[in-house]
Length: 171
Image (cartoon, rainbow, N blue to C red):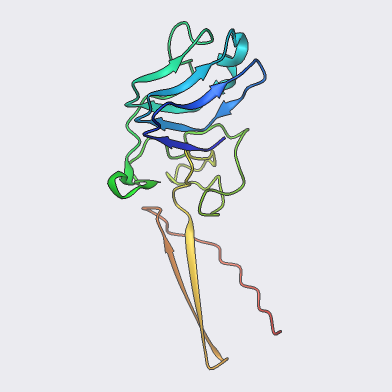
């Protein structure tokens, strides 16, 4: 759940049996995105809300007789900077808020919270891939023990309102 597989020389994931659930992942530049072991049968039905782009083979094996299962995407991910391995999503990525809201991790690879309304449409599904777009970064600076400066920045393009909760520890 919520992984990014880029340029894997063999395969991203091996779907080994009917209980396999592969959700909200991004496969790009892989030799094989997802391969099924033997007759994975119903496994294809449990593979949803993933993105497959630019792989030699998106899927391979008995579970995928017609290619990428319905409910998945095949779009260019729009990374911030693929050559430098910055696999965060740009504001124009179709993968923002495109994940399955029933299955996601609480935090992304940067430990930023998941299910942020990154495309500002009023809904909170997670993004596809390892990074959530639109998190807010808060930096604090205490000067002389009296003045607290808080700088808030966001990668969300149209963020106009934010709720900021501040807790103080006198210890």
